[in-house]
Amino acid sequence: MKRTAGTVFPAFVILLGSLCAAGWAVAREPGRLDWFEDAKLGIFIHWGIYAVDGTVESWPIHSGEIPYEKYMSQRKGFTASAYDPNAWAKLFKEAGARYAVLTSKHHDGMALWDTKQGKLSMKKATPAKRDLIGPYCEALRAEGLRVGLYFSHLDWSHPDYATLRPEKATGELNKWDYADKGKEDPQAWQRFLKFHKAQILEIAEQFNPDLWWFDGDWTRNAEEWDMKTVRAVLEKHNPEAVFNSRMAGLGDYATPEQGIPSSRIEGPWEFCMTINDSWGWRPGDTNFKSARQIIRIFADCLGGGGNLLLDIGPKADGTIDEAYTSRLKALGRWVAKHQEAVYGTRVGLPAGHFYGGPTSLSRDSATVYLYCYDIPRDQVQVKGIRNTIQAVRVVGEGSSLTFRKMGGAAWINVPGILFIDVPECVNDPDLTVIAVDLEGKLDLYTGKGRD
Ligand code: GLC
Image (cartoon, rainbow, N blue to C red; front, side):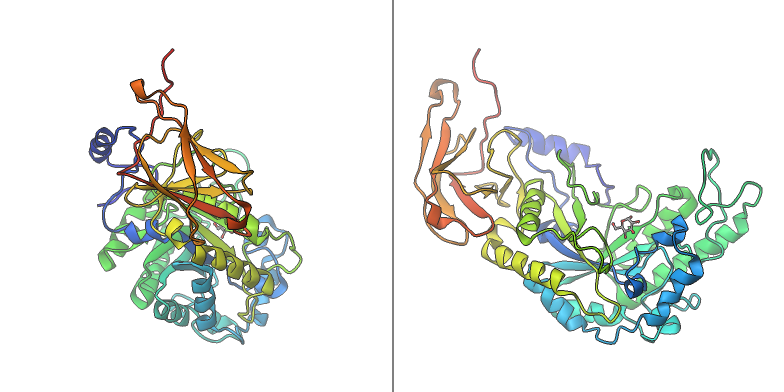
């Protein structure tokens, strides 16, 4: 069964909604997306010729900031001479990731695999002289990680790409994306679509990714891209494959980028974020988020029921700078300790129940996880839990905590506030997680009491 980002199955939702007292349990499509929704953490890898001079990935072509020829001449320095995909895969695993997504081709059109569609590949046009995708897929699979591949629909190097023009074009249309008025060439566009499909099929046949991470769909609509056919062909090739949203409305899950959503997203989603301000390797960009900030942001994703796709930009020789590796390892320390509050968790309590940070639920809804952003002063408090509390524990550390429900109005089934004592010694150096084990599935009071 298919669904597009943001849409859910109405009948399924109504059924689940009525089964669940508070009506906020997460509706889930059983099957194909399960591994993805349980995985929670992926590593995004932007690797391309832009790493040579440390320019922004592809975009300087479009903005005219760097002339096309000069930008593309970076390919002469792309060696991949120290590329060690096994070390990459081990690092990603150590970070706690369950999948990774590598740019097989960015908007600049440089393919990292040995494409038979033209000469723009790392194999044919750089000193790397080889396919870089196959070894990545093998290394990931050997570590038990799922394989994701990024692919840009739009291609600023292909002569047949900028040959259409939207009907109701207003304002300035960039020449890298659109033909001038009167210069449209539908036949050239058809040639481009043939090329586009042929490249995608090469990837499917050679690497069979578990996850397709498309990008650059925004310049055309689904019909112009012939996206239905693209999806159908890929589904036929691998009925289990997962698709991100950037398929002009025909994807599986939403991909908020760089700004973490502050309101709840319906359906599966994945937040993609850079560690500094750049997708690719840019030595001049030192605006790195700290490991602790990344962990907080990750907890925010968990609380909203989403994944984090955390980006790194390897250098042109394939090595990964210490600024990235140290942060991935620090994240991995936290994830390894707090596994039960990471993998397979579900969207947490609605806003207003816990003010210390995000919350999530275990798969069976019988444990509430409290991600404490700050070191609690004596106690933390949670509102609305009607269940009998079986135990309260510090995740990964093991201590049992004392707790007490105070107040409430038993005669109208309004629960008291749960106060939990948190001695300072149980705290994690980055972010403490408290597990509240319930008797039965969470029964949450969300009402307003009696007037
Ligand atoms: C944007 C940018 C692209 C980057 C992507 C990652 O779509 O165009 O450069 O690869 O975000 O999500």
